[in-house]
Length: 94
Length: 154
Image (cartoon, rainbow over all chains, first blue to last red; front, top):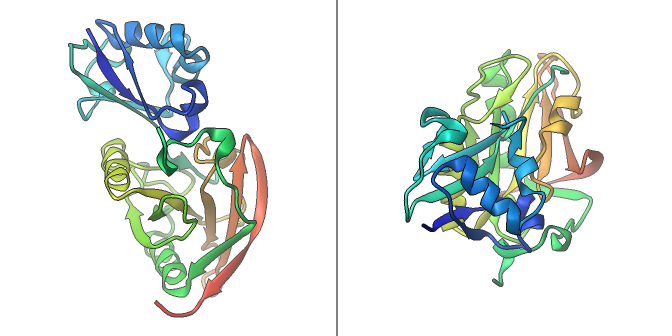
C-alpha cells in the first residue's frame, strides 16, 4: 500500500533533499510512523503528543486532514499526501 | 533529483543581504496593508525558483482576520504552493503588516517562519501618514535585517 508524500522545503533536510517520498500506512498516523523509520526526525516536526501540530497543514488528495479525521485519517493505496507548514505570524506575542 | 526545487536545505542560497524589488510591488504591498488596516494583511511575491527575483504579486486572505495575527487559509495555501510548483516558482517575498507596532518580526513571526529562503517583509501601518517597509531573513530562529533596494519601473 503505497502513498506518495510531498515534503516542503523546510523538511527536506530529513529526506536527503527529496521533494517526494513514498510511505505506507492505513492511517495518517501509521504513515508518519513508517516515514519516521526511514527519515528520522520527521515525525517530531509533524506531530506533538500524538496530535498533528497546529501550524503544520497536511492534505490527503487536496483535502485538509483537519476535516477528515486528523491523524486518524484513513489512507488508501495511491493516495497523495501533501505537507505544508502554515504561513502565519503576527504582532502578538505568545 | 536535480534542479532548484530539490535542493538540500544546507545548499539553499542565502545569496545576498539585500532585497531588490520593483517599486510597483512595494506600492502594492503597502496598498494591501493600508486596505486591510487595522487587521494584518499578508501575501507573497513569487519569483522564478533560484532567481531571488520577486515578480508575481499574490495578496492572500488573512484567515485569522485579526489585528495581531495572520495566517493563510489552508486551502489557499495549498493552491498557492501548487501554482508555484507548476510555474517553477518560489515564495521570494513573504509579507505581512503590523498595524500597531513596528515593522520588526515578533516572537510569533520568528517561531512560525518556515521559509529560510524567503525575504520576510514587514510593513507597519501604525502611522497614518508614513509607513515602515523593512525586510528580514529568518533562519533557525535568527533574524537578520537586510537592505531594501527599490528599483523604478515595471
